[in-house]
Image 1 (cartoon, one colour):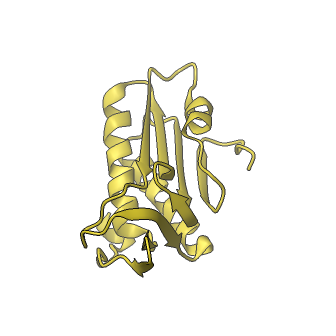
Image 2 (spheres, rainbow, N blue to C red):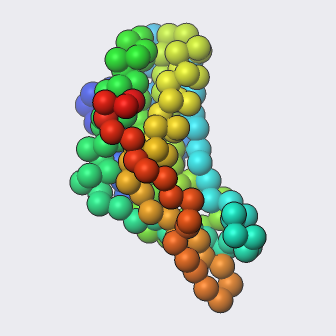
Length: 154
């Protein structure tokens, strides 16, 4: 996928995510801060099994719409943001691979840190995304579900 012409880059994809590519895209001459968050697949689970991979599923159209809304709210809260990217994987994600990458740039670090944290916390509670945990000999959809927030709750 080619970078957009604008300052927002939203994607839900089966392709591997590149934090380095997004960080390079978000780096701008007027930005003294670029914060990159990578949420990677880890081997532990709340059910005590040793996880070998994760699988994510969603309605790509709905997820991308909601990701765009997360970015819009972040921009309203921190108007000094310059570039914002949120990419999320669907399909199989192996251990150590990023499942989500968020990159935020701004002239100063505090806005970039705060907006990055807001974006990942909000993605987890606002974007419908189902996660299957895969282990040796089996798999199950994660039981870590939560009610999704409404746009007016953000």
